[in-house]
Image 1 (cartoon, helix red, strand yellow):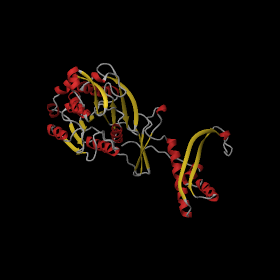
Image 2: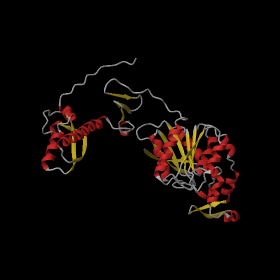
Image 3: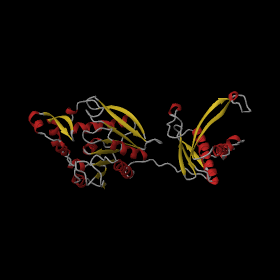
Image 4: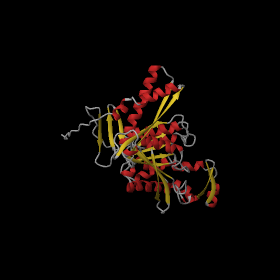
Length: 404
């Protein structure tokens, strides 16, 4: 996935640090906002793993650090659950203004409670997924080891999950004022509740309460064996895959006419940019140009594909020859580079005018091969079919087919 570092402003004008994860080989069809767990930040590996799974399915993900956390500006002591919800709303508005309005909200732990609360301010949201979320945001007060000093002095340095934070009484007061049941009942979006039966931080009974309070469409997936922070990478990737699969039923995903041909290969380049769909038999590929020349770099450029053809043909030919001879060839690596050179600089070229195409090919052979075998394989490399095609006369016949 592609990763962009971004900043947007909270309601106080302070810069919040964000990361936008994008699909590596296509434009995203939908955007999501991810709200992480209480006192966590966007660099939590579970956030990255879930985002990776979503981008593979064409969904871009914006994750960010709440005010006063991670790389974001502001004082954490001045924040509360309501300000976190406002940060989340500002993140969604930033996406709408800069890219595309988000259609999916994802919240982990207290972030799950935050996305449920934020939906009332974001009517464009079609689907919401919570992971290990508490039914009542006040549940977070149970994580604070001692609240007595906050209650008596109005401010205190407390420990949450073994880490030190400064909290003010307004934080606890704000949690007590939050009413969740009515908000969930009037959600107005599809809901997916994900929770682990083994979650010791936020018990699974919270998932039951959220599920019962919500209206249909609602779904539940058990994250059996996972801990609260999804520390095992396979758990977080599973969460991302399940969210992406579930959300497709509720998100608007543009349908494109299937690419088909009676020939060997067909390509389709759209009306904007150079991104090109490729279908070779049952195989699908993407071609593009670098960003520097106006492309999106979603795939190899045409000359890269030329190198690919020569490299794969070389490797396959050497593999076939070595197997036929019974030689101990373990692996073939072919490194290729294409560029233009002046014809006069080519010692063995007949044409000495203008520029010619020049391909550098470096072959690595792994295995217990003697010198004679190595030299023979080097000779065989020049006999691969694509190599021969490049050195022979090639004619391309072109005809125009009008759209019916």
